[in-house]
Image (cartoon, rainbow, N blue to C red):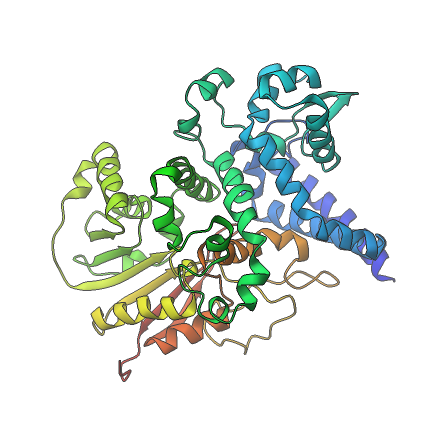
Length: 458
């Protein structure tokens, strides 16, 4: 049987499996014409449906790679920035909200142009290109409406509200629209300077916080997070905060509970949430394990926000006590930094550790695009599930979004995601021994569990 036939057979079987699971468990796969909600994606929480969906999509995309002319495939890749450019025009012009208010029948270009303030013919170019990729839909000539994909950019607010208060556009929203805007604005602009940054003998190897593609794109010498706090970046800072909320929305609110066997800790354990933001993870832990003590560490402006949020959500959680160090929690922290700066953080924590301290590092792990033998990193949980042949072992383009944070960290912040081998090496250099990897179903971010190397000398 040829590879093409195997892929077609795989798609057919995966779709049948998905339909069987949905029928058995009363699940629904929404139509492309329906609006996106987190609830609409509930079928993906079923492990069997999640696997069948991934197999079908991975096989379909690999079939496209086999059959599409290589010149066309490469042209799609080379011109991918046009999608980002068009998405930014739509996102910052409130096209998603305009179309939602018009209803499912769609809205004519003349009306969209009038409400968005974009010249009609230029807007048609943008919308039609995106509609070609199922982002928006052209119902009849020059009349556009939403698809499930484009509706992700909808803040849910009225156009009148957005125009009256543009600075608060993403306040009190799910954050996914903010995430899109963030990526197609500063990240997209910064990515254009990736080559120059990598090749520069000063900025390439060091990747210091002020030597990033973003520095080149925006003409600043400040580290990214300091740059965000400039008065002229007030909107971007608010949007970035909402975007991080959007990232969290893609995972269950209590996902931190599965990151470690928290019940194994002693009653008086102290959990130090390093770079913990406004304390989202800590509050989830506190609600489940109120017997522990918690400290949230972050920049002063963030901690001020955290205190206010905590006062509203759980004022009792502000009560604290000073006990022995037991757990260091780093959730989505190390990916912000180059190896040199990540080593500084890990080494400082190692200096503060006691022999019984546990370090939990929650970050994406970059999968290799090939088969990985179990012996590559010999710790429990090291080997991630691989896709069945003839699919790429890392699931191919289905896993594309797991590599995007790696590029985002480099272009916009100067950090990076890491493979498990890379992360293990980084831990060992700073005095930590990786003892296992906790993985969950679906979109769960893995947790590296480490303990101090006892004979390590700082």
